[in-house]
Image (cartoon, rainbow, N blue to C red):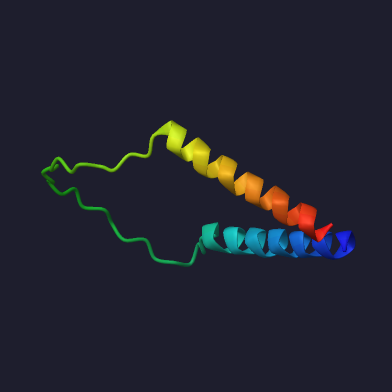
Length: 74
């Protein structure tokens, strides 16, 4: 079971790295558009902010759930 879990983890990591590398690679043959400066008026848009405590609570909950799933699988 541990071997299967390790193989799945490595496969997901490999697919993620391939997708990341493919998304960041730029072909030198692509024509570049010239950038023209444009005057833009910035409007004040209220941004929804997630507080640090809320983010840490979500991360902690996800880690506890992951630990429980791993413990059940072992």
